[in-house]
Image 1: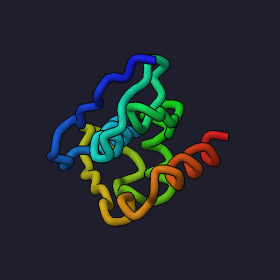
Image 2: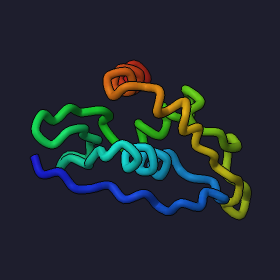
Image 3: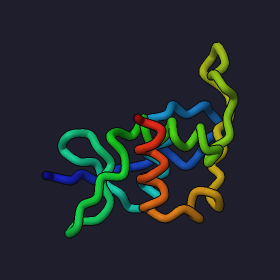
Length: 105
């Protein structure tokens, strides 16, 4: 499986980020990569699938309050997104994987 690095969409989150963009930001902060099938993968030697997609990771982040944002983007796409770094960073990779798996199904 070829892994590609994940680059965050930017450091300014004064706009409403989609679930996929939130997933990108969180994955990039941990150094996770994107697998050939679109899954989020931790590790380079022992590859562990963290989430089936960036959107699933972002949706889990919203559900577990790792981010704070309005429920919908404004009509012009505005609305700040705040990442609760302390809350997210306090979770181990295994905890994040379990929470995403429970949320997905």
